[in-house]
Every structure is written in structure tokens, then in C-alpha cells.
Length: 69
Image (cartoon, rainbow, N blue to C red; front, side, top):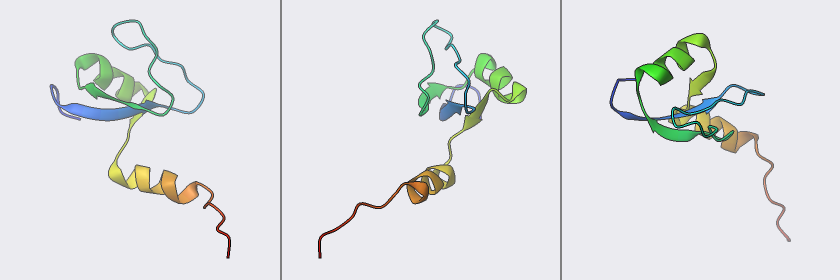
């Protein structure tokens, strides 16, 4: 995470975190502008960065739709 750059983060499982504006961070994650606020949350272990690899793992874990055949 580099300051000033957009990055996608999500709260660790079971946590509800407020954004800098007082609203809650979405459980599934949101794109935010990296700031000292989010760096502190990351260092505290309250959030995690969502990488392409993490997104692919989530997709792989979802049940596949059944097809008729």
C-alpha cells in the first residue's frame, strides 16, 4: 500500500470498521485512497489488502452453478 494511491481493502473476518468519514467499511471490501489512517489499520491487523490472487481464491471457493444436462 502506497500513500495516495487507490487500493482495495476489506476488514478482517468479524470486524466492523469505520472509514475516516464515519461510515462503515463494506464487509466485502472497498477501494480507498491509501492514507496514514488505513496504514495504521493494516499494521494493527484490522484490515487486509485485497489482491488479485485473493479475489481468485474467493471465486474458487464459491460453489459452481449446476447445469442441466
